[in-house]
Length: 111
Image (cartoon, rainbow, N blue to C red; front, side):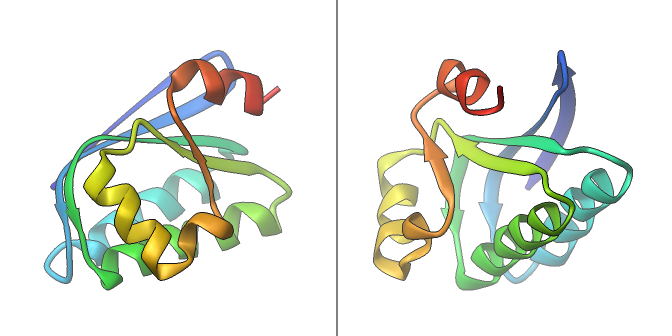
């Protein structure tokens, strides 16, 4: 798992790559919450290179959604591969998270 942060205008982008599972979900959660707690109110998570996510990974993402919502911010995930989208759909997480097809959709959502 690798996380690279960048920003464009007021949108903070977290590009995740590899597997998100029990071996690294705490790190993912810590990195995302750190960004939120440092003042990020618009966070877009790029899932284009995520190859696997476990329930521990889902919890890490959910913790970030809850934290940014408390701060009246926005979080959305984009460019999710079909197999990862299936996990979100089957777990019910698609209903409680903003999952968008691409970065252009993110820019519109974050306005």
